[in-house]
Length: 381
Image (cartoon, rainbow, N blue to C red):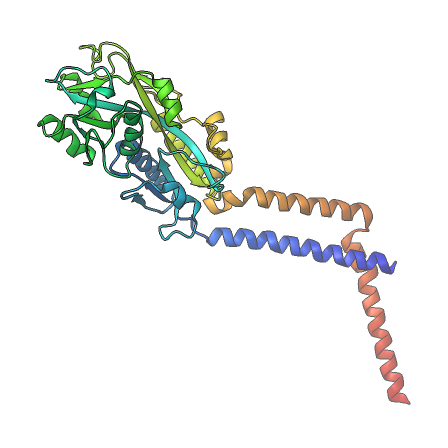
């Protein structure tokens, strides 16, 4: 009987501690604010700036504070996402570069939102070129140092024998590069093209710019790595004017949203919904539903995969405050453990109230009475 009473007391204490733990968890969650979600991207590149803006708007609607930072000169977004001690505290980023999971194990993909064509462009009043190899000796706007167009563009041009030793590389941002190409101070331009570059489409439609095909795209993509072979379809710039008149082979650069693996699940669902709404609609470059998608090069975030597969945000993330929604599964697990303990207790021991009123409480009264009796006996002596 004594061992059963001891075990009963231990069980009651454990149950009370579990209840207190769950209650404390809930209270702490209620007073916590949604975590800050800072984003970093190359804001000078429309193809990477647009996803950052879309995510920030979605996070604002969901109540997550934070800001969007510019990468400045070099795209070190993945490294900053990996490093939680970085002064900017970057949790989410947009990158167009390869990521090695062995080097950055805490970086996960929230989805590739586009594969942007890397375009080699010349003026419309010049004779069309058939390959980037013909740019040797010309003045080529290749993009700012550290930009995707600069890094990937230089790698692709190198495959065709075009480099800094035989060609003049100009390092201006996109808007300046277009102006210099049109006014004749540059002969060609390298740029990432996407839905945000409406002005560039108009120049092509008016035939003020020519697009240079990239031959042997599969071989070039295999040598450069990470990039893929693609096409700009006929009529992409103007259906009425058939510009371009036929499909143009190009190299495409994946644009991927990344995050730290510890990012709030509630934030992931808010981000995934905003990305799907913006980039899942389709364009002249991709059919509806093509993006967001995932590649095998970066581990995929499970919550993002779940959303893109089901198209549904779980009810707790739609109805509960973000801190509680993030803790819902741990709370459910604790509750399940508590129910299991209660079940075991009911199977192995008598009812707690009966144990208290029928055994423990009378026992306490009996001991108290014995102590009082001994005290009175001592006084009589």
